[in-house]
Image (cartoon, rainbow, N blue to C red; front, side, top):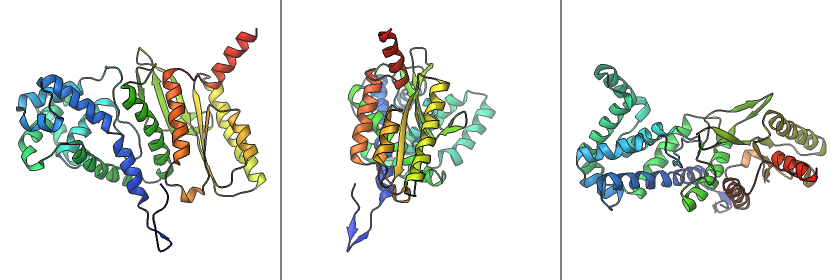
Length: 339
């Protein structure tokens, strides 16, 4: 979005823009939960109507079906404040907690741990029991479980999550752009194309001496990671030929480390720098699977540009449909054809 100016002064609320975009990525998860509750309750109503009219046992049954779907294909994702996906059962725990209870990790989790220990029941069963009881008991006070209401709650929860994860601002923007591309495809197709599921790790991937803050695991029929999408994020505040050349050399070093480690992986380079050299861009484009250049000073970087978002959406769609293979794989196939 362009800056919001008043009398020449930027009054934009960029953090809200980022959090709203991230919260919108939770809509497929909400829709998936709604479908599961419809199946269990034998109703065609909205999730809001079902949660207000269903018995405690029906709420518990619907919730348990969601928790136990861990081995299903094409599961939707739920994210923290900087766009890292939760494991499925943890995602369910947070989603239902956000509907009815604040501070699920700090306040509710210790209570559940105590009950689990004293009752000797499985933790997942205790989580389902506690959350279904809370929804049944307090639903008339909450008054709404519609997507519009839940979205506002998620924005609030994500803001708290992001505050506790300081130092990841640029990573958060890149993750949000990546998640948007993934969710655009998922909402259109209800799956991840040729991959059964995907996972977005919550920690860096280290290859040799290179680190990749953002990555995506693409899972095959056996739930194994078939290949990855690795995103080195490079920022540069200075300008000038010498700096530009060294910067490019560092990027190529990161790309080469991936190719040596596993030539089945995709590499998506994100450069955040003002007045980036077109010549240097061409060198990097020839080495990577996808290049996104955000032409701003890193200190002013708050959101992915619309043009680069559309390009990233197209790239992810090509990866999911199998129309695009890692560059190194394509090079090997071309070599075989030549022979």
